Image 1 (tube, helix red, strand yellow):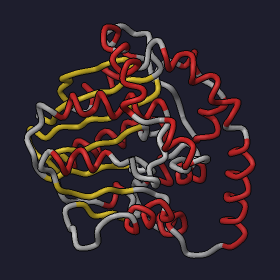
Image 2: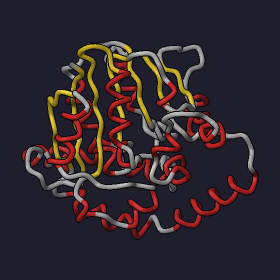
Image 3: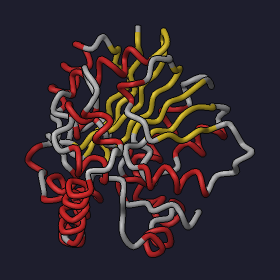
Image 4: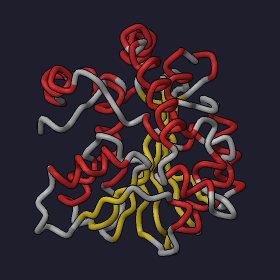
Length: 274
């Protein structure tokens, strides 16, 4: 695993299941929204995909560019708002993105519009408001989802549901509440970065978005400052060593009998534009 990768248990669980969902998607051009510090694009490249990875955090995009072969043009990285895109893609991937947007219906409509005919959307969101912790507040989440709500919003966006799994049970149900204790330090970091951005007033991404008319990430987000920094993680060396897939494989497989039960901490979805 690359030292740049900075995973979490939930990341391992999502990536493991996303690869299963990817098996039924023919190779083509992809868009990953909110790449963060993840490297699912490596799985996409191995399956014959090429495409574009976006994130609102310019530092994370630069990290990906530094750790990627510059001669390889298979995957490009941009600190761009997905609302600004006009082209279409055969596959869109968005892990832990939709819950950041108060106007999630506008996001889903935009994603559907960016899909080619019969194109696939694979995304994940946190499940169940009863599982809300300070982590959700720190990340700038607008909500955690319920299954019926999610299915209703997909139907309203004219997206055909192929699979909807509730992942992570039973392991993540135990680890997620504990993680909120270890993430307390990020609260001060996020507040400090947000204050610095306001004080500097430089023409960064937030200011550019604020000057644009129409829908954009800043206007739709519940907390844009926290959303734009949510891909950051601490203790990268430790997590890269400890959260390796082979080490967690028994737990990843343990969740499989429960995927269609509504018991886990998150939903992972595959749907299509028709």
